[in-house]
Length: 215
Image 1: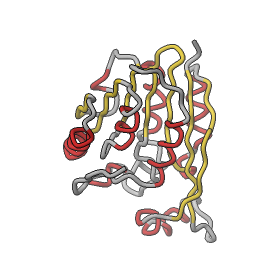
Image 2: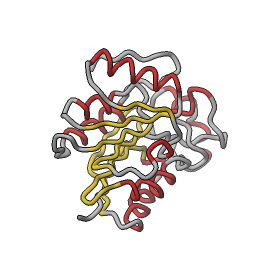
Image 3: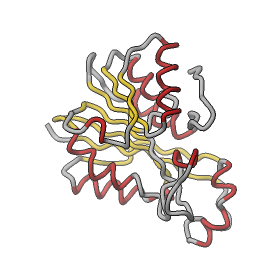
């Protein structure tokens, strides 16, 4: 997929591709309601829109919103793209599918700034993930599905457990090992000091978790 990505906007990477694969395997009826959280360049929202769904894309960054709107215009696809913090712009609405590629990298600083908001997520990498686990279930209609991608460094077991506690049927459905990117390479010493990496680790495992609300 050829996309324009403005400076400071998260460009599609391995996690985007892994989540796109899970999206491709998901049955979607025409007109299904899809929410793309943290849309960034709009890559996943566009993939969903190409399947005839009604897409709402949300991002906290104005640059990301502008980028996604531009890519949607270039692709000739209609979707709603709004600025906001996670679920706030869609409070009270219901969706058949929620896609989430949130910030999930453990970081020494408690608060991310600038472009790092797209990947830094607190000391345990769960600053945004826990909010998604808490709030997403209420926005899923009967039979609705949440697909969320993140690193094993941020505890997929916790994600599955929290989603099951919310009444969803949840499991890891995709896995992929990828080489460290620039952020993890620069943070290896700190991650090892936190016990999140061993000295021999040179790759990161990504997972996609699928959670479904019973009909």
